[in-house]
Image (cartoon, rainbow, N blue to C red; front, side, top):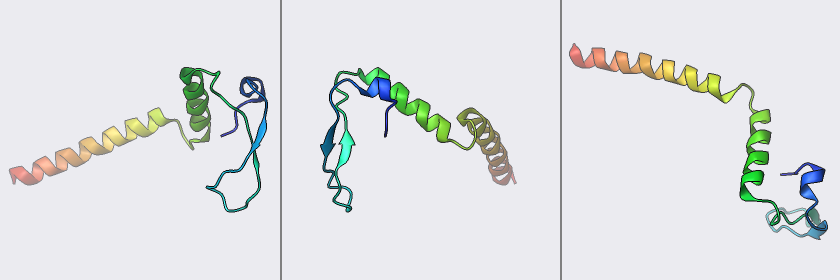
Length: 80
């Protein structure tokens, strides 16, 4: 994941060979050890939220409503 440039520059950028990729090309990397885990988690969560097609809260509300409908239907089957 790419960090915004001002936050990423905590050290010098360097080339890194990542064996997870088959292209064999080096990728630019920056050490983030100087950033706290809290800041890194905030950056990652923010970016992932931006990538969602709709807000997570609305998905959770809809899922709760669907779960309630299914629970009522299952309960009705048990009673009959």
